[in-house]
Image 1 (cartoon, rainbow, N blue to C red):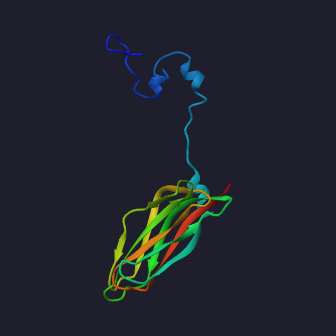
Image 2 (cartoon, rainbow, N blue to C red):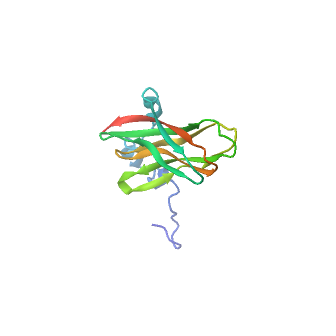
Image 3 (cartoon, helix red, strand yellow):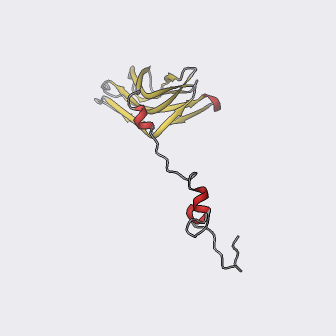
Length: 170
């Protein structure tokens, strides 16, 4: 279109690209195809929110990784996940644990750790939540839950994770 020897310039936006800043038939011929879009997912989903509780643990030793415990998305459903919360009881003296939520994508066998690990120590009960800016889409067989491990002491501590989601039938 434009090179250094022409006086034409490259379009700077959609309206310019379609020639809608000039006269002609273009504005009339594409007018029906160019429309605004409003995402109504939040309005639709607010009445359909569900939550499921999962338990991780107990964590039994120093640097003991208790594994992953979470919720599997059942066959025939997809989940729009809003967030996950993690709660636990007050820590005993000399105990430190870390918790971190995750999503496991079964179709690509990939574990996605969400955020950074939260660390809790003596005398602290904890309640940590991770909420997504946009709905996290999870397919059948995917898993969402909490990783937790001890970095000091033997807490014998269980961690509960609650997944907040909207089920969508597929």
